Amino acid sequence: MAAVFLVTLYEYSPLFYIAVVFTCFIVTTGLVLGWFGWDVPVILRNSEEIQFSTRAFKKPMRQVKNPFGLELTNSSSASLAAGMTLTADCLEDSRLTCFWGCSVQKLYEALQKHASCFRISTPRALEEALYSDYLHREEYFIKKHSKEEIYCQLPRDTEIEDFGPVPRSRYPLVALLTLADEDDREIYDIISMVSVIHIPDKTYKLPCRILYQYLLLAQGQFYDLKQLFMSANSSPSPSSKRSPADRDAEQSLLERAGLAGSGVEPAEDSSKDCVVCQNGGVNWVLLPCRHACLCDSCVCYFKQCPMCRQFVQESFALCGQKEPDQDMLESS
Image 1 (tube, one colour):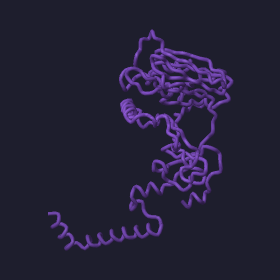
Image 2: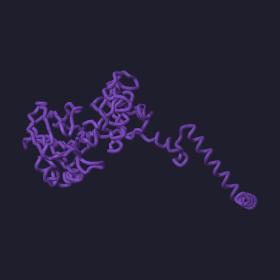
Image 3: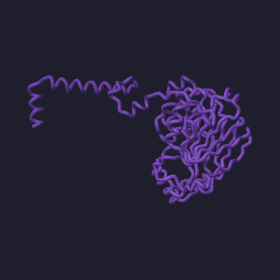
């Protein structure tokens, strides 16, 4: 029936023939213009060509000094029953406050309060923002540049062996670092740092690790501290020595916990050479994949990440070195 309709339309309507010829002319013109490198209407391009032609912008960055540093010590032996050890390295005298069993909902509500009007610059401020919705609190004084190791443990009288099934309503441990001296809060833009830490228990035996870290600024903003990914060294990393069965089991637990693909994998050993020329030092980070893999000379030639092939939307330099030549960027 459709064929009969088209034949009838072709025989009795010259407009159909004219429309077909005009469409063929437009498509041929677009192909010719594209062959000679002229601008082609977006409607005649496929999605891959549109993405590739989009210029990657340099992200404006502002350098700030973070006075806080927090690391996990002997994370392989940490557990909810045995406790864990934290190493704090701060530029000024600070206070480390550990909130065990902190409410997930109340924590993010507290971060939103900091962004609106309620500045979280002291342990007391976070406690009020949480409405004391946690199980236990510990506080320690940290001397500057001391790299002091702090042993933390949930008291046994709480009789808590795990925090229930996923999705959980409480984080095992939330560590808050704040400046002890009020005068130091006027010097630094970053006034506190919140670290969300997973500790293995009887239900989920994932290795102890820092899940999230938030930097809180005096102006009210807070930023999620993200991990950068660099090219792996030829020497195997500790994570690569594990058996495939262990890696599969851990990945399965991560997926059930909702943490798979969120960038919380253990950091690998990394080299400092550009992955392209193997000569210049790595200085540029590509977004949104967060791969630090290109030097100053090679960054202007890539609109796709050479490691994961994801299209680059923005990039920024790690150091204040000479930026790539503008003419070279335009020609690429």
